[in-house]
Amino acid sequence: MTKKIAFVNFWGSFVPETFKITTYLKEKWDVEITDMAHADYVFYSDHGDDHWFAPEHAVKIYFTIENLVPDFNACDFAMGFDWLQYEDRYLRFPLYYFYPQICELMETKHQQPVSELMAMKTGFCSITVSNTNRDPMFVKVFEALSEYKKVDSGGLWRNNTGQRVPDKLAFDRAHKFSIVCENSSHSGYTTEKLVQAFAAGCVPVYWGDPSVSKVFNPKALINVQDFGSLQELVDYVKQVDTDDALYQSYLQEPALADPACLKERQMELLKRFVDNIFTPELSSCYRRNRGMWGGIYVGKRQRQVSSWSYVWKEKVNMYIWKTKQFFRRRKVSNDARLIFPALPS
Image: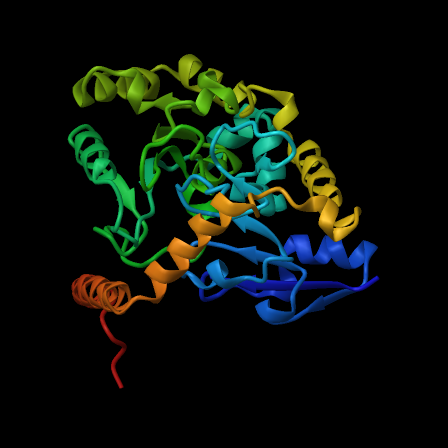
């Protein structure tokens, strides 16, 4: 039987046909990607409100790459970052598991000979930031560590390397440490930024997820939140930097604290989760409240997102956001022109 699937409210560069879940579904079933009105299964994300108008018969599956908690009044199933348990309705599945190459490098980083890793280290610490619409902690950590030694910034933000680095993994690999700050701090919200630093074979100076040690080995990273002040952090980084044995002990530690978090095991969990949704009859997968109060809840949201005031408020907020982004990019662009002068004609 053909599985009719729609994808709505995903980010602009999202391609449904190459989404790994779509690829897996096509291995087992005939799949038709259609519009929401004709879909039996609706995948949706955080970039819009169209999903509120999904057909009542459709099974809704929420997928987020942002620091957001699923609304189970709106969806039947969900995937996200939070440490939740809700019968068969939720799977914690951070985005980095969709990057198999860096996951494999991360999982095996402690098996690489330390002498080889040390031979690659030509710099003290790296940071690569271009999007500054995030918690300012990355600025504080960068400035604090820069008081000790130069931190090489390879992104557009405060670039001091002469160019925006074309290969972040190679850039990080040449440094002993890498500053890794999440966009925000929330339990469970660990992104590919940390995995990339481990994959590069450097010691992450990490800020973000307060529960990061549930998955990642605290002996393999320096957690900013373990220190009472930034000065205490800097003093400890100095200690690790000047003590080869101590530094190398970080390199020899596995990145993961829990073998259950290996990529292959997590991909198996994802397949089971997806099978549980798509194998039974459609009506057997209904989980969200389709009764009176569920209908009232959805109806209120439909009226809200359709209202004149809501639509214009969203337009104004989007205009303000785009204006800020324009001036932020123009500032970054001006800085970049100073760093990357145009070639003579």
